[in-house]
Image (cartoon, rainbow, N blue to C red; front, top):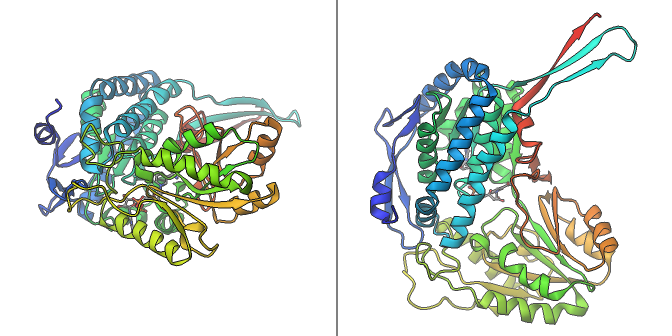
Length: 487
Ligand code: NAD
């Protein structure tokens, strides 16, 4: 089904609790806005605190039976979900482009990426291993048994409406944990679609609850309940740290995927073709609203002018338009708040002496109620301009220069964040030395794409705790139990 009104109509708008889509107890709803034109796409049930507590009751009641369900059965449900999402890729792509404003090719890539977590963790569900050891003293045996951590709460952002949920739900279910998920209020429809996919793939009632809400605190209030054993959050550092502090009151296991501020280091020995081409993904995917988006372009001063000239051509070739329009290469920002923030960062850079190479106006014909921001290239701003150190989350390529490796590393590591980094050098030894020196959880060498469900995704410093995906991802939902034997 690729007719948008019919697709929106087909998606459940209720809270998903105990296997059913239900209205909020007080009947509250909130609007889902299409950022391409400001229109209301749908009204979705808005969970009250009582609804959230009902959801917690249901996942707690389902926990023991789900943990006791054979891993093979859990795995098959995840595999069927992967297939369901793959079979419905066109609908999910259109849906995401409508509720997020993301261009269709980017949405399709996101849906494919998100679906892959269900395949990956279907495979991991049956490979959870314990251990059997001899005590070094010779006085006993050590058995290490991996068991699910228990009922979990996931809170996700809007910028990857499927994948941010998928990489929490899939490993949690694979490990035998039940889960409540609160999607971002800008993009709840994708998560409701996913709830339907899981239900139709055979997920037992109560194992997953999806509780969209217009008031986030109604769900995070659950952190006061010691039955909840895990918080997994993706979003801003500020909110994540606040929620982690609340979760610590009951010593909940916590995973945090927080803000980024990725350096994009282009060395003098880089292949400029690669460094320029990779801008298309590292900067422009999702109009730059990506936690691992290249944020600070650190370019060797000897190639600065050439890099700016060619990167500007790449950015200029991107067509801005409504997310659901097949002619768009990138869409609007996700809402007024994002538009204000990016506008402010660019205005501040201009006030700090920036040269603007691209982006002084919007193309004509865009809906004036949409949250559009043009692809922009800036250089030569003062070091204290805000975008030299803050996460931009928009289609803005901001260039700074360096002369030595020491200077490049100092600049790359000069923020409290450490999520992703990109670096370009044709000398493997040089690249490895820099990759090891950069304070980040992930480093891409000579490429702009980084995410892979088979790899551990996550940050260091104030970019987070824990890893999602890879062999590591399922361990965020497992606790090792040591069983000691006297023999
Ligand atoms: P946000 O922190 O504002 O919101 C994230 C989620 O938290 C949303 O569901 C929101 O409704 C909820 N929330 C906000 N305040 C809350 C509160 N007081 N109590 C409970 N829940 C609350 O972030 P955002 O604007 O949605 O997302 C953008 C940020 O997310 C960026 O900083 C980006 O770098 C980060 N991000 C990180 C990763 C990663 O993997 N590290 C991935 C995607 C996005």
